[in-house]
Image 1 (cartoon, rainbow, N blue to C red):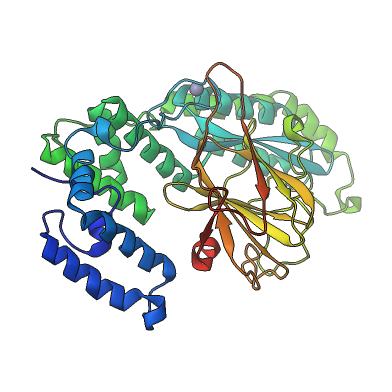
Image 2 (image 1 turned 180 degrees about the vertical axis):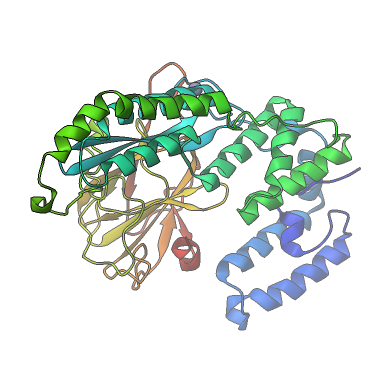
Length: 438
Ligand SMILES: [Zn+2]
């Protein structure tokens, strides 16, 4: 019988799932000596607890048998039940190979051009529709400023024609979520095909877990040659052409007249000024959210100013509309940083700064599985997303599943209250290096 080890208990001890009790005991003793913080070990408290927890289960015959049974053979018995396949944020249909995309529209007037991004998790069909819409709007309104608007317009339409701007790391997480969700639903072929694709993921955690799943399924007869995934995202020449035609219609027609009008204006007197990024996109659906940095991906390094209450210190994706929201109350005497991380890879999704005795909300969060962590302090470190002087950080115990509801009820809101000294049921202490890592 072949065991798998999805919670990594055997891996934590560096032994094979077939190891006998003596091997497990010896491995634990050696690792405990190496990592125990009080014994001058070089490991962190976190590593030590991971090893201790693994040993506690694997050294108990009954507990080990339960663990092995649970993670042997049947996908449906994996702890992935309750994970749902990703839905397109436009049409709400399940999509096997979603992509996190941004399509831009350009509006220009006289000397100014404004970018309005549309971001979301897309199925191929909705991506097609959204990209053509964005190009159409840009082809109508993008040209009409000097000097860079025509260049911006062409570049934007070209990008839309090539399928928009992608967030490949976010896509890996979505595919991994799908691979596990399909496994839990018994759709092993699709699960296997997606996992195969993820064995070369850039996120090392996802790649490793995907390789384990692939090995596991191949041991049960899955065949790489028989199960192949079509790429629905390859660029279709005719679709790309339609963008180019949109780009060409106006310049050829009315564009000629406009050019003549522009030529009659004395170019020398014109200020050299093109406020390309001057106006961040305004998302009216979440306008009440005190989200100071809006769509900016991250605050510049070097912490150029003391953050405001509710200021977003970091955001890996552009905010999604309509996104989910994390509502926060900091009822302590200290300033806090709250971090939302991917539950799977622990990758930092967003971080927000809070004043003492204040509330804030972090909006525009895409569908996914998250954990929420927080820490108190008064001085930011160089990365601008953690404190130098934090006395410790905490994590809310539940893994939150934020997903858009198919019935159209829309985005969800999670509410949290930060406490200076929470009971274990309300939050668990996490080592500082876990909180601090990006
Ligand atoms: Zn769709």
